[in-house]
Length: 408
Image (tube, rainbow, N blue to C red):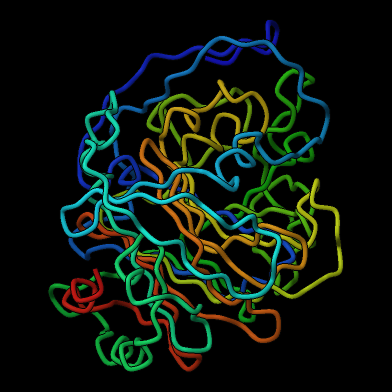
């Protein structure tokens, strides 16, 4: 519950389980400029529908009082802490718990060697959540054609967020494996194409509550709102994002086009625009995007720091920016930074998992500053897999399940 009069937030803890939990719950996709989104697609097994999960929603919060100023958007303090030099990263590789200290600060633009992994005989960190074992067994797998690969040692090929230069042929096989609806396939449930001006089963939102839709108050600030076609202001009704470049720190959120109704999204902030996210333990997202340089050097306002990331949809439906105890982010309900630039003008896109168990290392994707990159994010079984695709890849209406399984 969010009380705008007292500024307090409260909730009841909720347990969860499953290999992909809690990211098997509904998720939202977030895009921060400078970025031009060309295409977006959502896939899930054809036996599923795009209807949202009816699971009970979970957030474990503490009471806290703090004022949030009008239109002030800022990086969470936890963001700085979680990516600091010296952070301890833990993962399970081939059944063994390994760990290393993060040695990358996010400032340099030249290739950095991956830190060596050291085997630890200690037990994995304990968690009060029943899904912790599932997260410990996840490996964030990354495949990229040579043009987007970082230099990594052979020992890091299995480490969380490792890069590979061996998937050019695999990218071609993706097109060959795509079909128009064969059995055992993942169907395309949502699609957006900026050049065509078309959007099916998606809605575009942003954090401009009070501008035509949503709400604003001096306690919690701006809620979610409909985004205008340029992605830089609110709107009174759903708009299709134009073929435009988002400016530094402008953020657009994609969710499904199914509005929350009758409490089926769990708790939602009063008065805000609220939609279902993309649910399911098995799902895939396709992106075509550019991240051009814009010369902004103000790191405090995310200048020239584009990003694409995934959140548990409970977070934006309550409070993505502001009091930490007013969303489930601090309790580990799930964030996956897919392509994130961590310093102004940096040419490296990092990938990091933030949940009750975290994962990431110093490998990276090359930022697409001229021309677009096509990529797919796959969530399947206990794996999360990022795959950079060939430039001639065409978005299919469905993908063979066997191809998905071969990737992760």
